[in-house]
Image 1: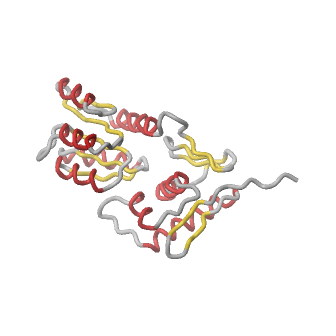
Image 2: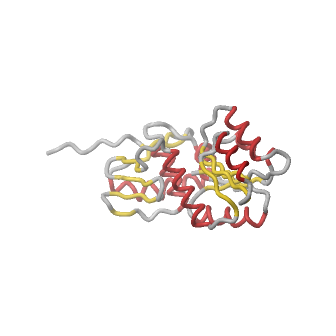
Image 3: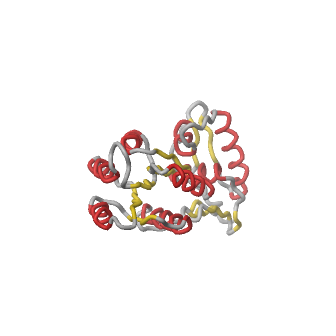
Length: 227
């Protein structure tokens, strides 16, 4: 899951970014509204955490422009405790939730998990693929009810492949989903992540196919024939 954090308070932004990354979310941060608008119009994210009091372009204008592009991206707005009118206007413009400053990191992470569930259309948050089950909210994978020991990168990789089962995913697409701005991840590194994940899930009869020069594909699961 990739999050864009738009917050101009550097101390708060640093704390939120660290917390979200420790929870396994790929998190990019901008400190003004114009940068947020540019990022949202050129890249894909799963959630926007938006401070309304941004310089250069207000958070409300960022939200308005986002919805004008017919984007259904989940948005959590951050507001000053006394800005009730801004909160109401933000919700009217299409925000999904809001938090008043100051707030606890644990509450913010709970709101993020709730929006993750909502982003799944209110449907199941578990993705099943044969004996493999992946909890998109808790970000935990199981094979035959046994928890898999996966790194944050491997969890992100598995999520991308599960969401595109039977379809080819290029290395560039994987980099976009797994890496934050400024991170330099080589094709060799992606191959290492895939190799490690492949070894951990093949015990359930699940295959990640490599299409040389093009990318990877999580093959559709075919249950063993009954004897």
